[in-house]
Image (spheres, rainbow, N blue to C red):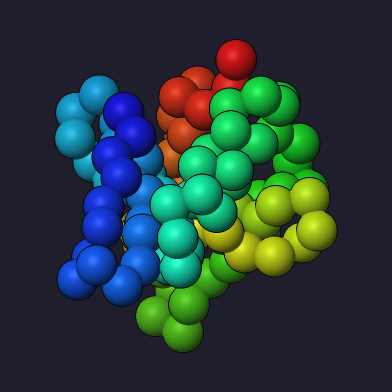
Length: 100
């Protein structure tokens, strides 16, 4: 499920949630709805290659991932996962929602 938010009439953002309602990805802020829609259309019309996912670990040992566009710019970030396997499952779930 993809939810679009308009925060304070200043910027737009999208959130991708799993079937259980867990947030899989929260986007960066977009200045207008056209930019947001363009990004969502790009995501929905391609198979997401592995290189678009940047896997990271924070200083507390928690795992997270960033999703990048074709130009390598981060367009969204996941929440924190307690394990690498959990993070990989989050990526898998995100792909299942976004890919055609």
